[in-house]
Amino acid sequence: MSRDRLVLIALLVGIGAAWGITQPFAKIAVSDGYRHFGIIFWQFAIGALILAPLNALRGGRLPVTGRHVALYTIIALIGTLLPNSASYTAAIHLPSGILSIVLSTVPMLSFPIALALGMDRFSALRLTGLVLGFAAILLIGLPEASLPDPAMVWWLPMALVAPAFYAVEGNFVARYGTEGLDPVQVLLGASAVGLVLSAPLAIMTGQWIAPLPPYGAPDLAIVGSSLAHAMAYAGYVWLVGRAGAVFAAQVSYLVTGCGILWAKLILGESYSPWVWAALALMMVGLFLVQPRKAQPVATAV
Image 1 (cartoon, rainbow, N blue to C red):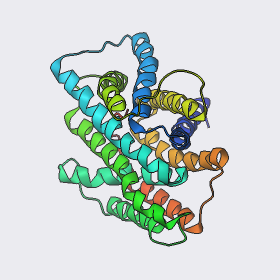
Image 2: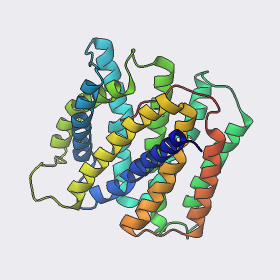
Image 3: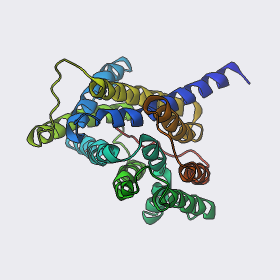
């Protein structure tokens, strides 16, 4: 195996590990009373602080015409504000590893949306992957001994809201494009608009998080999650350009696997045999629904 190939694989693993750790960080962030709008504001803010100099170094500008601001707003809403509100709410009630498994349904949910919009062709293999993905969700939710507390099952639909929005986002970008902007520009613009949208929501709902010491584990988790996401996303964009979308799409497996591994290492979570069976089904389903040729990269905030 060539040195370049090893570097690409190492980067793929690093991106998967970085994205995977955001789920345990989310669990820690909500562990001491912090709630979604306050967390999301700082996620936008930290993301913007990282992406602005990155965009400047790449020689990128940030257009602010009406069409561009509309794009930033849509991506901020369906890529972060709405899905993460649901995700952080679900994180209060569900184990981090379960959230990682549920999050891997994004490509499975994307498939029927793409079919409905006439953007994809029917495929028996991908339909099988979709069925296996939902069978995995049933394995988590139906057996009484699957979750630590059977009452947690009622929060599974809330956990599915985030991947549903990410699936909508991916199809939106694939259908309508990004007004000639690259993913880093879109992500930066969405972060800027997201700051304006989330700040009043955090203040009005009493969820504002003051950036003042002392700092505890939830504060560090918010910073760590935002940094990990921004760096992983920038690395992913570079990887797509260097190795292609199909190679980069394999990060989905690593995000799920690393998310569970980080949850065990950081949070000490353990899972029933039903959950491990669900993970196996989800991995097979994920393999079947992955695109077999390069497709447009969907931006995510």
